Image (cartoon, rainbow, N blue to C red):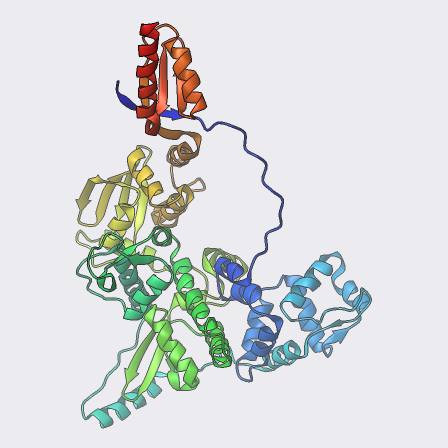
Length: 546
């Protein structure tokens, strides 16, 4: 007899899901937040929000940021209430807005600690004292940013002072927006290279990043390491593979969220003050000007420490000039308030949003790609542009080994072909199945391909990924749930009555996998193979003795 592998449909009907109400903790809500504003709404208490509004120098910017999260009608109501002293009759407010404003909008504004909880339906609409004072200060203020950017003359004075202290000329060339984009990308690529275990990194991540990767369970000590557990190298986890294929802004927010939660876990009053300062700094960054530098002296002691911590993730560029330091906000730091791709798209439609204007985090990538393709030997570019063809061949314009490693998660590595600035790989059933085994899901693969599609394909109204490729990836995903694979032993019955006797025995022992009476074949679950064969030998001996 020979062993074989057989597929069978999962038997039995599934019971309907229970209708128990799940309780969701604030930590779970925070993990689903996509930016600072979503974090404020889901994770902070009303008391904490009121404390942010009360901050003497920056509270007005927090009020402005919160107001921009409201629908247009609610924004109009708030501005009119501030101009009317913070309180107005409910029936008159209803006349302002008509059917476009009601209990739903009031509940949202109460949740944001903008309005006081109405006692009944006829109670006047009243702003909280903290939000009223904060937004009133915002209306009176002409400052577009909580910090004034340094002029070139001020930077030159700092360079002269540093030169006098160090006894040598100190020069600090201004960072251009392109320089900041490259800096952020290089710092973040170093994190992702470390995550996938790329050897001989040019830019090594800070030890604090390694600690965060371990704390967030994106990496773990190698379980196959046989030496001292303390010296075990870190390897990527399934959660880490999922992280690799996320949008860049989501990846950075994941780190910032863990940073905030690590502060929160300390659980003392000092930690609460430090967390509030961190939120104030993050919110104020959204009002900074991209490409401008700011003096760290404008920040508090805790604020300067937070700036140094955020620089570890590549969110800020910090530079020492003598005994003083300056910092440049990067585009991704300014977009954390909005929260990801959706925020970017909405800001480009609505106009006037915070975060340095329209365009995504890598708005410079299309320009860099065009310049790279214009030269036969492109410069060191870390941008990625993908074309997926109907024959399942993938064409990736990149010069980054990191991108090749990421594509290798779901593409056939043996089919790779290289040119100076382009890589060709194939998507196969085995490569997709290998990605599923790592914990990667079909929608994550397709989202990654759409996110990094070639700019020339973005103008098309149809999907940039061929429909047959999309459908096939989802079909391969469904195979995991449609078919159940079991290792079995095939038994061929040769005597009369043997099939019925063995089938009855296997059913009683729960060893039966599948059978065919016409062929006198039974497929037995492999762990029960020896037991069933022993029964067959005894049955045949008993039948022969007759």
